[in-house]
Image (cartoon, rainbow, N blue to C red; front, side, top):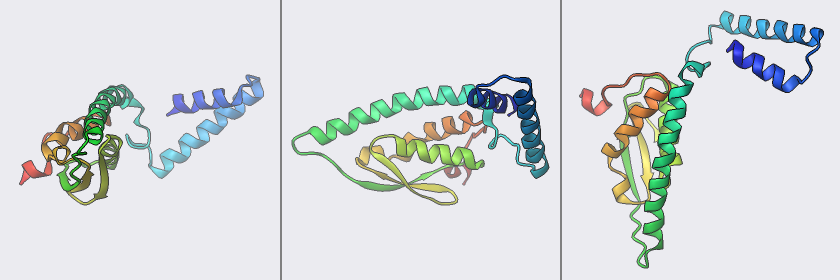
Length: 161
């Protein structure tokens, strides 16, 4: 977090005089001290250590977005427009809120699907095409989203029961 704050300070300030660098160091020390005192420094607040995994996940997600986009365009551009809206429950086993949110947002970012509601053990997903609503198709996305933020998920809520 210190590296991110220093980089932000130097980028936004643009001045490198001794007085401003000293004030920046004091400000950063106060922020870190306040964060430590409030006990809010964890992997959700400062997820810098999992940044490489997150970037790899975003590359994978981008490929999935392209594939889903092609699927939606094909369905919509057909003369008979074979759209079959479906609501389905997608189970998840993430424990960390950040990985839950990343999973739900990834579903929404994928064309043809929207996360409608998050419950304790599942996400209600609206899919434009019925073939996009199979919970098994979301299993890999959930596992990859969890891994991207440093959470290890081996089972879904469905597997646990």
